[in-house]
Length: 307
Image (tube, rainbow, N blue to C red; front, side):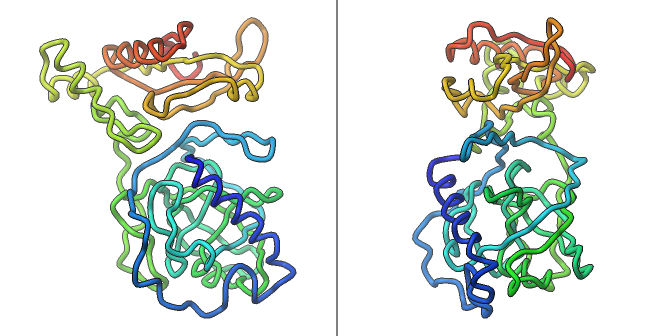
């Protein structure tokens, strides 16, 4: 998450705090005026997981979680962020069915059910937040309207992961039955299936070109080898007993999507900071070399998610 995204998310937090008190005036108006004719910020939509980050003393660990199913409080946002960039570089349009979430990959398709009235919709998660109390999701004005709680400001909801979204698509408009909610998952959860993976900042990672040039293989050879390798490997950057230690670490987003997993070592439970999984050893070794060159000399390759 860049500084602008975090700043916008924090600003949205104070906006939604006023929702229960201001009712119809909460964060937006009931009517949805046209989007501005000129959007001053250039869109740069990209897939993003992102490194762990800290807001108001609390750590959040973005990750792919296909079993995600959570019940809690939803809020909504509109006018103040209409036309601004989301955390993954899209343009927020309050008239479309989108949402902000603290840890799901961006963009992701999620189903949101209003447990107070039974209404249910599918939204495109393309932003970070909310960072108020224990709210689980922050919906666009249109999404909240579809779920019937714009006037109330808050609602108790159930949020479930549906699938990965196409980066080049837009959030659906209300009533758009033709929109495809989810794309076929490809190399997001297993980056090594394709040499050109996506880094945490959304830029292409040309590891395939690097491996091909140093081994004399073609990119197709590298892809075929990755697809046929059976074992999973991870590059472990470090083990932490407290996520606060991340504050002293300078993680280059170009290292790749960083995840945090629990690992037991020496009878103690640690937080394992990892990049991966990889199923091709040459690519895993190349990633390890980059991590070590970035100053993490103790990095190592571990096999399987359990270490």
